Image (cartoon, rainbow over all chains, first blue to last red; front, side):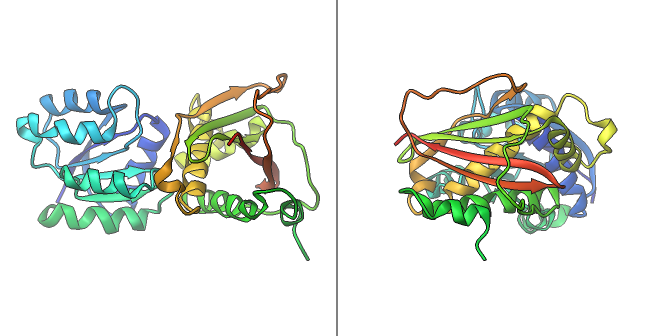
Length: 127
Length: 161
C-alpha cells in the first residue's frame, strides 16, 4: 500500500539516504515530507497527514526526544508510528524514546535491510 | 604482519582504541557508502582540503576529525546520495560532517560506558588546507590512515580527558 512519510534530520544528506533506504526496502512512498528539526516537523504535521515518521535525536532547535513528547499535541499525528534513527547508542535515549511512544530505534550506520526490519512491522497492514 | 595503524597502536595510553577506531570507520563506509576501505602501504599525510570535526564531551572529552581531499569528499557524497559524481552539489560539507558524526558515534558505542556517558556535538566542517589547529589541552592523539577508493583518508581522535 502506498504511504506518505516524514523524515526529520538536520542533515539533508541523511534525509535523502533515509528516503532511498525506504524505497530500497520496498516501501511504496507516494509523498515524502522533510524537516530539519522537531519544531519544523510539528509544523509539517499540523498541515499534512503522514503514515510514518523517521526521526533523528540530536538536532538543533528541538531534538527528537522533545519532538516525540510533543507529538500527541498534533491531533492528526498522535497515532502515527515513529522510528528513531540516530548515532546515539545510549540505552537511556532508547528507553526514553520508546517510553514516549517511539515504535522502533535504528542506529547509524545502517543498511536498507535494517530499515526494512524496523519499519515494516510498525506499518502493519499499510506496508 | 602488522598494519601501519596497528604498529602505531603499539604506543600510548589509549593504544587499544586504535583498532576500534579503524573498525568504526570501516563499518560506516561499508554500510553507508557501500565500499571497503583499504590500508595504505605506508603512513601518508594527504592534502586535506576538507576536514570534518565532531566534539565529544562527558566521560571522554576530545575531538574526532576526518580529513581528506576535495575529490575524495565529493566521491563520498556521490556514493552516499547515489548520484553521479558530476551531479554532486553543495552537499559535500553536509556529507563529510555526517560521516564524521557516524564514525564518532559508532566508535563511542564500541567502548564500554561511553555510549551512555559521552555526548557528541554537531559536526563542524572546514574547507581549505591553509590552516592549523591548536588545542589548549596537551592531549594525546590517535590517528588512523586508510584509503578510500585509493585516496588517502585520515581519522584522528584528540583526547582531552
